[in-house]
Amino acid sequence: MKPRLFSGMQPSADSLQIGNYIGALKQWRDMQDDYDAFFTVVDLHAITVQQDPQELRQKTRRTAAQYIAAGIDSTKSTLYVQSQVPAHAELAWVLSTITGFGEAGRMTQFKDKSQRYGTDKTSVGLFTYPVLMAADILLFQAEAVPVGDDQKQHVELTRDLAERFNSRFGETFTIPTATIPGETARIYDLQNPSSKMSKSAESQAGVLYLLDDINVTAKKIMRAMTDSEGVVRYDRENKPGVSNLLSIQSALTGQTITQLEEEYAGKQYGHLKQGVRDAVVAEFEPVRARALELLEDPAELDRVLADNADRAAEVAEETLKKVYDRVGL
Ligand code: ADP
Ligand code: NA
Image (cartoon, rainbow, N blue to C red; front, side):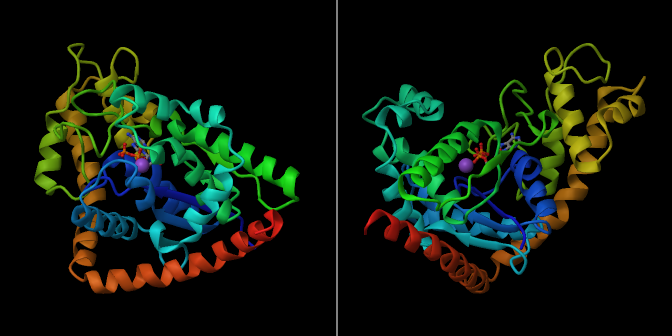
């Protein structure tokens, strides 16, 4: 039997961005043959901040379509919408009863957000978000959890909760491991290359969206922020813009950073941008076309997602039943 893998993304925008693609989707696609993988659109996580109901439903569908368009095969992997499998919320409740209040309060992502928005504008759901994430992972007895390094602390909490439950109630959960992509798989905003590119960024000018018109994408790349040195070399600290462009091209073409530096030796930033543009356009064009095609038949897409949710629910119910039994429910 193949080891289990769990990962997911929030449907928090109409389109995913190239960081989601390089840092998550592309890696998921490459891992799906070696794992029994569960890829989830985590809409229960998305409602921890206010959402428009109509728009949320639309974003959920669009996110799922982009998973498939990027190569997640719903006959190999299980690709479903979190809220369609009730066991996520049910296990989260049980896990919340063995999570320390202080322990949850130490999660840096919550601390950042509650400081930024104030505790009255921060929901209890946002506070318990990591517990729901623990339930997501543990339901499937996942061994591998590919996540960005900002989620590493949440996977650590998941491991702690699994070990605590196992020692209190008997062996129940597999202890998962976070698999973190390398430094060059992290993509930064093209206009603000010291901050991570994000699909929910305030300004879209430096974000490469999978579903953008391909000409818009090309223009954004040609306008990317660089520096005045005029030498194409990788130096994250002093040349964040140029380094970011090199990371993007390297991730998409498989060439190493060193190979690219040699290729661009003596050339100008315009050449680098053209190279990046060509690589991104070649990668995005078929993905975008496939996603738009899938979205033209929402009934068929919903049917695929419902089938996959049934498959996920079967596995999840098995774990939940064991948990209830152990706890005395
Ligand atoms: P976003 O900031 O776009 O909303 P999330 O925080 O929801 O993205 O992350 C979803 C997945 O995409 C995670 O696995 C995360 O590591 C990956 N990811 C997001 N942004 C980037 C980025 N800029 N570079 C690399 N990976 C990223
Ligand atoms: Na997310």
